[in-house]
Length: 134
Image 1 (cartoon, rainbow, N blue to C red):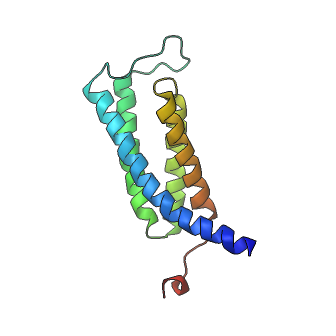
Image 2: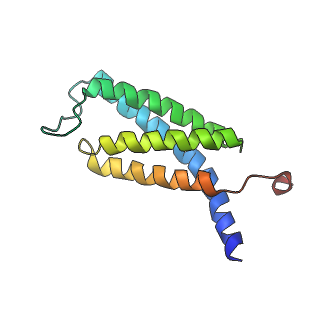
């Protein structure tokens, strides 16, 4: 009974992870566009250990956002390579947003939490079988 409940959470979590990866990708891309278009949109934090030009960081956000949205869309296929790509991209999103923490702390913590849940869901969800779709 407990394993069925865990499998149901993980299967539902995989769909949630796919949708979340698409949303994270769109949000990352929007953050990137803002940083590229308006150089002073994000304030720099003096004395922060990672000093990056916000325009350059905007390009990282934009590219990572596009890849995350594509990976999220690929998750709907249920393919193993899509999960592997999704986990890799979610890890990159997580690291990117951890480094971005001083610029937008509350928003960044939400994205980190969603990325962690997405990684868990992609890692533990059972592989779909044909019997599930009958």
